[in-house]
Length: 144
Image 1: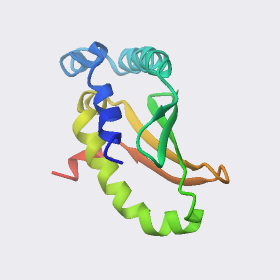
Image 2: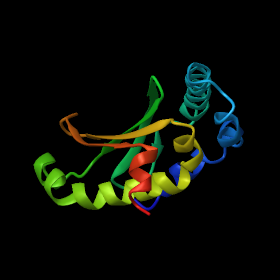
Image 3: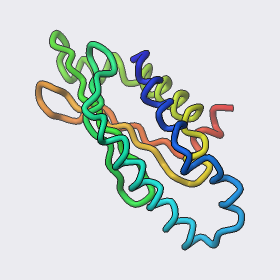
Image 4: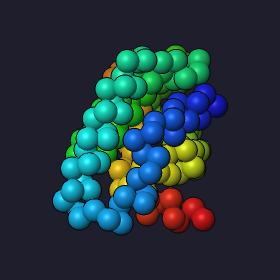
């Protein structure tokens, strides 16, 4: 999970969001949504070139997609000795906290631009959804 932060840091490397906060105040809502969709599509196309990517010995970032103004990161977890239910029960709270804090720090410019981020975790064994963490700017404000 430590390497998730490396992936999160990739978000901050794209210049498309570098000046977003200043531009948001000047754009009408409809234009802002249109611009955000363009930013998301460019980002998805660029980061997808490097996937799949091993995050740690249990986790692989398999895809980055989008829906409206949400970036969706899909991770595959391969915990051979744990059942899906055990992973959900034992890891959900810890991962939710860690992922939320990491995204709030590394993706602040996207979140400030009203681009939401979703982390979806899938079981390598069963292909079942293990967790989904939807992170918005409002959720980050609650952490402070």
